[in-house]
Image (cartoon, rainbow, N blue to C red; front, side, top):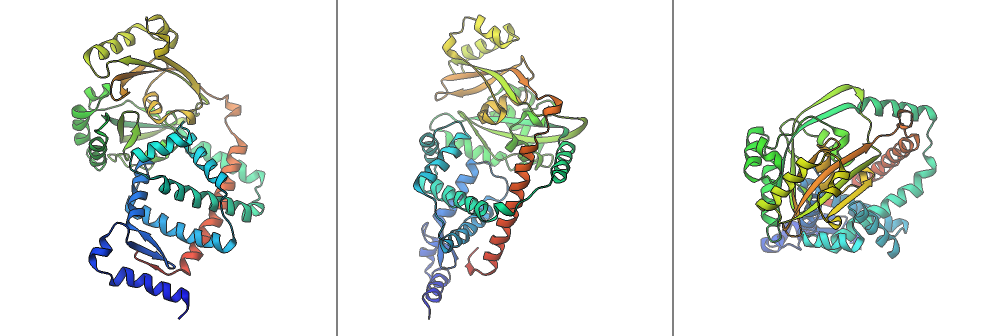
Amino acid sequence: MSSGSMLRAVGLAILLGAPAAAQDGLFSPVIVVNDRAVTGYEIAQRIRLLEIFNTPGNLDEVARTQLVEERLKQQELERRGVALAPEGLQRAIDDFAARTNLSGDAFVAQLESQGVSYETLRDYLEINVTWRDYIRSRFGSQVELSEAEIDQALAQQETQSQGIEVLLNEIVIPAPPGQEGEADALARRLSQTTSTAEFEAAAREVSAVRSREQGGRLDWTPITNYPEPLQDLLLSLDPGEVTPPLQVTGAVALLQLRDLRQGAVPAAEPELVDYAVVRIAGGLTEPALAEASRIAAAVDTCAGLFEQGIPDANIERATVAPAALPQDVALDLARLDPGEITWGRTENGGQTLLLTMLCARTYPLPEGAADREAVANTLRGDRLQGYADAIVADLRASATIVGE
């Protein structure tokens, strides 16, 4: 018997003939991919990572599929002699962390505090970044785009984004230190509801933001007010469905789709968002909430915040691209028009109330709205993904996979 056949037989024996206690162990093999095991621990860790990333769908199935395909990719990369240098791995972690406005070390620490080990993040990024670079190197020269293809993609993009507005309900569940697990469990339970009445009743009971008084109901909002990843998530929902839990500072947020509509005017995406955050001592205490109400009644521009006797150190004003907005701030701002204010989120262990004000949104000029290079990059990425999917399909077809 060849060594490969022997290992495959061992893998099958582990899965099919091992005592139940061993099979149930967290580090016991659950899936074997060409002699390489995927353990229960790896699946549990990947599910937790997907939860933090707000990945939609059946997370157990998604985790298993990802891990199987990553084993196949790793074996193919080893056959090709392709590996990621240590500095490449650190750069990948730093780049990934930058999406959340954190350093690499801070991002790793945040994940570890939420139950995801460094090794889980490392393995996830290492294989996927190496595979991406391999696909680009192998097939990049084969991807050629014509001007006509780019024009067609631009036309389709403009048609698809015409004036889409969403009608949502929201719940923001406080998650002070020591209670993150309870908040997350409640959010995951509520995310399974498809009843607007049940969701609105929960909003009145547990939500920390002002919309709780209306059962979490928000007005019609252009979908372009939300970050791009959240736009895609909202468009994937049917009326009544709820997003996975969205992790924000000191809380967990949920959005329920009530309806969506499409207008006749294309909705441009803002280039820049100008906003302010005021930090008020006291968290959700009556004095802090009263101060937030006073500020909201007294000002109608962000400049006016600096005239309310608030220490300058307690006012943060920034102008950033939408993609650079922290998720919690983006959720606050999405439902606001310029000059409007919201509050209810906290930080510093619930000791500081956050008041968020939208100063302005800056939109591109109509003639500049169509970014040909961005569309071309998207098309190239789609073509490369097609090559990658074909390779993975071939690897699956020739692999021995047990337990998936």
